[in-house]
Image 1 (spheres, rainbow, N blue to C red):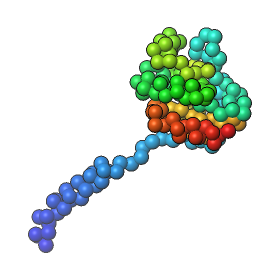
Image 2 (tube, rainbow, N blue to C red; image 1 turned 180 degrees about the vertical axis):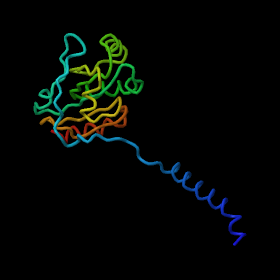
Image 3 (tube, rainbow, N blue to C red; image 1 turned 90 degrees about the horizontal axis):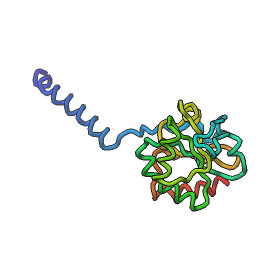
Image 4 (cartoon, one colour; image 1 turned 45 degrees about the vertical axis):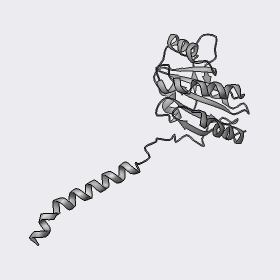
Length: 175
């Protein structure tokens, strides 16, 4: 019995090491998905961030045509990385609207001048209230809204070139 007690600390260490190693090899998925997928777009009435460009209203999305709603910020590095992909989606004929999170008109204007402007509308969300209503947990995030104004998909993180075919397929299915 005494011999077994001598080996107990080593066995306990081996068990803890095994659990940690298993967590490193296959970490848990910690992605927070929106609970709004499959539901109508929440009531949005955001003033425009930039003069001469419309803001965002829920009624804009129930027009019979699917569109993307991109949640972004000028201070967001991954938002810069996804800008070329959004421009490609716009060139493919997709309408893209945006919600600018905790941003200023000058900063967004500079962001669009540097990275291109794929947006038809940009709504101002200075407090993140609309972002929370969408179930968005960060920037960038993009929601696919069908022609009836329902959220049918969510892309978390920056859109990359290899994401574009899947987004276009989902857009076609949302018609």
